[in-house]
Image 1 (cartoon, rainbow, N blue to C red):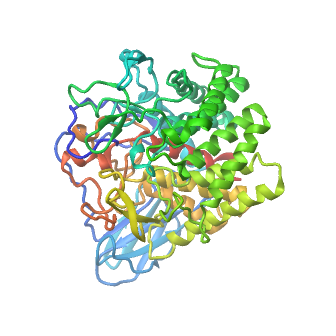
Image 2 (image 1 turned 120 degrees about the vertical axis):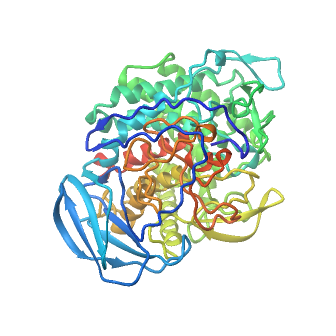
Image 3 (image 1 turned 120 degrees about the horizontal axis):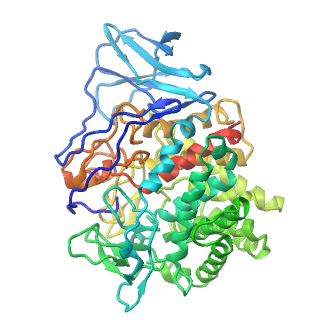
Length: 620
């Protein structure tokens, strides 16, 4: 995930064994381990029916996409439940679309009105050609109920327990520290990251600390949901595992260590607490986490873990009082020194929304007015970055905000802030910003023909290491960006936007009865982003390993281990496209296939959060 091209890893054994029958659905067979080059091209069948392969909400949107290459003809569909036809009709043609391949016609089959639980399938005929979708379970709390246990299991399977991490050097110092625990970052990367890509300033993703917060939040705020599915003890254990790690990597001076890194397992590289830069993985002194480099979400996670410990009467190696003391000490330190830990010495939008999340959780944990005062200031900074059409700017200039892993987090942080703000005028300002942001997401996604409803984004290309020039729009992130090498599939981004649409819409009281308690357009947007990752995409691949009829290939040399419940990076723009236009999935060679195939902790983190956001009482 964090690896650059041409870095080859020692092949490692695949440890995930798939033979699990889950409530509401069955796991796919495990792809065979392979070190050979794998090329996954778009299916060439003249008629395809693509459908979410994992689970669909009983009272949510349900849509299949039909791709057809051939002579025009009358198309019909049949929806089956438990093998019996329940609905038939003519295919609904979608607008012409050629960006992902010429000569195709697209149709949709909407069966959202089918709300009885069961196993569903869509069959289609055009002329003499026939095709059928995967079979998908339809039920309440669908994704959470079917895959929640294994997504939680992914974190436990990803735990890093090498005793060597109890005594690690700190780059360019004589110090040694205990950084034991946490989770390995990705299938082929046993490094541990609160965030990476900090040297590029606008690309920091929230990694281990985001996972720790989602787990603690889920165990605390959504206890009823986890308990109803028998998962409360499991999620509490994982939340405290994450909080314990954050305690260990909190330096005595008050900052968190950003990265435990060994140049992606390069032979001879020293594993240490360090920063890194560029495709070479050059060690740097940028190992003190700014808010945007995981520090903000680490504070949020510790504060929420303290509330969980108080609620549950349980804790990890350290107790709830320690978690809260850590969070308060870390915030006090970053409040004073944060710009010094930013690569360019300037805060940007990621600092704003992660610091805001930290402050919301601190206020909830302590009730102290000073945290609310600071939250108001951070919210005001974030809102000031919003453009008239609802999109955000990343900096004080003209760079549009776009993010491959957490594009929904600005809305989620503002929604959290609105939940603690007692002053009506300030709360209204946050809610107005949320409404504008969600309207922007709907508008940009619907501005062009878009058969799958894939969330589009606004960006600039990089010139001399900085974003510059015309502001462009597209489906996938540009490959020519400020990092110099990093681009990959966007499974985390899509789940974050789905969650933002659900959470933000409820915050602004934009409710409806089209699914998830949302109006039809918003429910469809939230569902489209999840469906893409779960199999309703042009390749017909479920990126959630162990679920669906087709999973990404295993490419040990490039992408490493594949864990059940883990989610692969996903689909990108075409290789060689600066703007990310076109479409591609795992074309090889091996050293590059991590961009598509490798599992990465933010993907499962965000899918679990999205599954929570659209399940249970929150969705009613």
